[in-house]
Length: 464
Image (cartoon, rainbow, N blue to C red):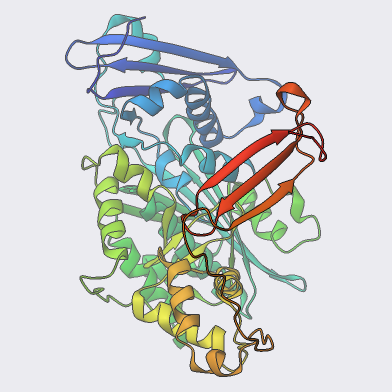
């Protein structure tokens, strides 16, 4: 183990096995050296974690034990696992939510693993070898519909046993074929978010598979819109293949789709849980360029740079750690608050008008107005100052506010003719016991010069 050099980045490598997780912290420049190595044996239920959860646990273990290094240096996480994108998803479930929040305080940067120097890390590199051939991900999706509701299950399996599961519940009316299409679209969107290039999809719906492969004709107009949506999403992958499999070979995705709307909802152990309140076809995506004065533009540019692998400073990484994308909208994550939608200046002004003197407004004060905005799910950096200025400028609040009305009285002036001619005296106490058993204080002030004299007393009737 060596001491790291100041001013140079540290590299973190993660390793996961069936019974343990490990992490190695090294510094490649100016001289390659091993800084620290941590390992943890999985206990009990931890051995049954999915591959994604084990990678996140290794990441969290390293952050706990190597916290001083994480705080004093820029740490670059070298891994081929899409753990960074998964931790930034807003619809995480279970333990992954708390882990994501704990890791958000560090300004971390993620890069592909690449080559590893040093023979002492040979075993470490064996777990995540450099792929010579493009890895193909397997996507199993299934949609279900019964009397209790509709849902979808997505199982995305990658190399080295990496498994990402997503359970989706639908709160709107749809048919069984529409549920299958919704499941397929959600699976393709999840794969696109993880930057997967080669994908093989498996479904037990012969109709949907026939539509995509061209063996069946799409006759329903509504399903035709789903077909075009899927066709557009497929273009994002270098290679794509969809095949029909029996339901027995798609059992895990089928189970997830049914558990989403069953009474035993607590049995779902998937990493990502989502609830859709409208079809994905009705989610209109618009490309609107925000104005240059919009504070969100800097955050969006930094997030895009970080996702593209560009170098981002530690200060900027910590600044954008609490922000995430949901579709094309920017949201802020908090410890106790839900996802808060980030607003521009004009949108913030409209929200304050509606909540302060809108149809349900009550002309509340600045603190109450700020609390209402947060409960409604909105955020912008200057929310407290803007609420204060908005309330102060409200004409109705100034006209009908509850002003304190004190009866008028004539002011009585105290005139001191010269220096030390008139004094004001008072005694205060008892105070905490001081030196000499003194617990009272005698204070005198001259009215002309405001000169102050103080004397400590043991009793209120001290002769001194």
